[in-house]
Image 1 (spheres, rainbow, N blue to C red):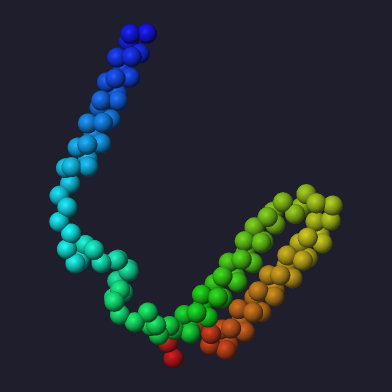
Image 2: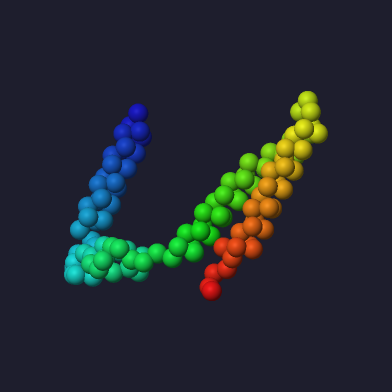
Length: 116
């Protein structure tokens, strides 16, 4: 029991010493740069309304749509263990054909072109 109390006292004392040292050790010299919020390269005091590229928004939405559809098709290899694997593969191919047609349509319309 004496060893347990000794270890408890040592760990408590060490914890208190480390807490006090970490509280008093760092030099606190705040200036305007350190007190200003970091905004990932944007001017935090400027206008919050910056122009946003509509073409970038369209490409981002297309990426999300295709990414979601591909994520829905990921369990397809387990479809052969269902009662009707032919039906599962038929509907999966229908979704893939629809996605391909949508991609071709966007390509023809120029929605994937970054600059005109």
